[in-house]
Image (cartoon, rainbow, N blue to C red):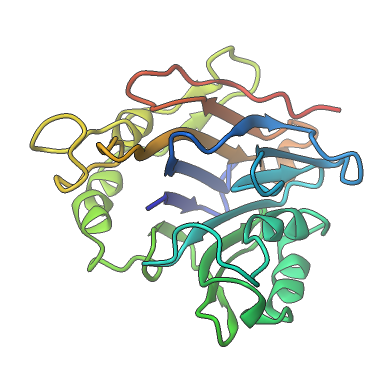
Length: 256
């Protein structure tokens, strides 16, 4: 169950801040975010080596796209296209509104159910796909969380446990000129939290975990998009290529 935290503050210098933990089988091969697609040189994204798509990426015009499974839909299904393709589809567009409109027009039955976030420094959308339709839902300003259920759905134990904890934190203060990407405050610590009952206990619940069957948190991201007023400052992407409680966040190079 991947988890995404999103903070929209349209009037601030950094109007979009995203934190995302990827939960996957440990033996599924992948590469850290980079420009891995010759036919999409404008896209920087993590690459899933099994299906060729991605779980999270950003393009050179500042569109961020992330995809998450809906409950009970982990893994591929015969006859269905890879949901990781949809991240790359979104990154083909110059802004989030156009990307969301294009995704909403796709054939929902071609994919297993998914949640998706498509955003830039002006707009943000939750794409909810249940196998019958792909709904485009605007995301209001403020703090939001998404996992395998609906946006901000506190019937998700993880959202119930962490939403208010994120809400008490001061907003991150990104700075692309600093080697550490700026002051992210308590966000990295919560993304690395292993729950109240000890390490590796997903049932705690935990933002960061590993199960005996090999499923668990395999990477973590911190992303911030600057406002138009800060142009030409680049976005900031800090990436932990492993469990964030054991792996340092390092810079993802976004400049061409």
